[in-house]
Amino acid sequence: MTSLRSTLKSATAFAAFSLSFPLASWAEEPLPVVATFSILGDMVERIGGEHIALTTLVGPDGDAHVYQPTPKAARSVAEADVLFLNGLDFEGWLERLAEAASFDGTMVVATNGVVPIAFDDHDDHDDHDDHEDHEDHEDHDDHDDHDDHDDHDDHDDHDDHDDHDEHDDHDDHAGHDHGAFDPHAWQSLENAVIYANNIAAGLAQADPENAGDYYANRAAFITEVETLRADIGAMMKSLPADKRTVVTPHDAFGYFAATYDLTFVAPQGMSTDSEVSAADVAALITQIREESISAVFIESITDNRMMQQIANETGATIGGTLYSDALSAQSGPASTYLDMMRHNATTLFDALGN
Image (tube, rainbow, N blue to C red):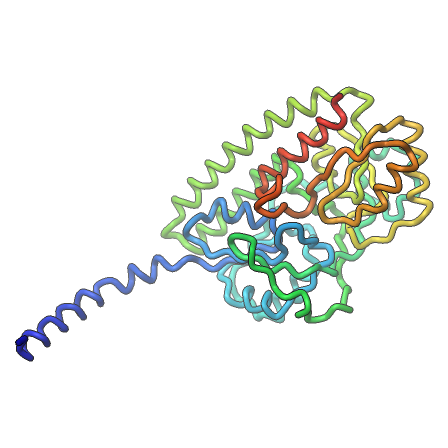
C-alpha cells in the first residue's frame, strides 16, 4: 500500500512539473485574427499558418457588396487581436461593426502602399459607345452602395457560416460609398505582393515570437505569385488585338485590365448592388454587335440572368464564370487566391484566344 508521504511527494512533483510549462502552453495559443472577405482571408491564412485562428466574415461565394454583419460577426471582431481589411472604402460596413464590437485590437489595411486606380464620374455608364476612357483604365463605373452584405461569417476551413436570419440591420445601407478609387486591388498580382507584405508585418507586430515564420511564409507565397505572374502575362500577351475586350456583369477587373492591356466593360458599376438601366444594357448590346465581341462572362457572385439575356440578343456565347470578389468553395476551381487568378486568366484565354 502506498504511504501518504509518498503520495504527497508524487503529487508535489507532478505539480512542480506542471507549473514549469504554463508559459509555453500559453505561447502556443493561436493568435485570433479576422479577415473581412474570403480572398483576403486566404492570404492571411497562407502567411499566418498554424500560428493564427482565422475568422473570415464574408466567406466563399459571398458578396461583400451586400453583406450585413451579424451578432456572431461582432463577437468574432471583439475577440480578435488583429483585424485585416482591404481598405479603399471596400468594407463600408466595417466601421460600424468595429464600433459595435468595441474592437480594441490592431487594424491592418492590406492595400497600404497600393497605387489605386481612380475613377471619375462614371457612375451611370452614360456612354458605352465611347471606349477611349476604358482603354486608359481610369474610369471604373458606378460604385454605389456597398453596405448591403450577405452574412458569411466563415472560419478557417470556410465551412462555418452564420445564420443569415441574424442581421443587425437589414435596412441600413448607409455609408457604403467607395470613394474615389477602385477597391478591387487584389485583381493585380503585383498588388498581391503588397498585400502579403502588409499581412506579414501586421502579424509580426502582434506576435513577435513567430515573426520569422510569418516572413518565411510571406516569401514562399510571393514566390508563387511571381511564377503565376509570368504564366498569366504570357497568356494575356498572346490574345489577339481584336479579342481584348471583356464583358462582365459588374466593374471589378480594372486592375487586371490595366496590367494586361485589356478593356473590361460592364453594365453594372463597382457594386453588385448598383442599379442597371435599360439604356445601359442597350448601349452594351450595341457595343458587342459593333465590335463583334464573341463571348461574355458571368460572375460567381452576381445574378447572371442579365448576361444571359445579353448573350441571347447578341449571339455571343457565355465564355465562362469569373471570380471577382470572392473565392469558390473548396470543391470549386477558385478556392484559393492563386487558384482564382489562374482560373480567371485561363477562362479568358480559352474563350477569347481561339
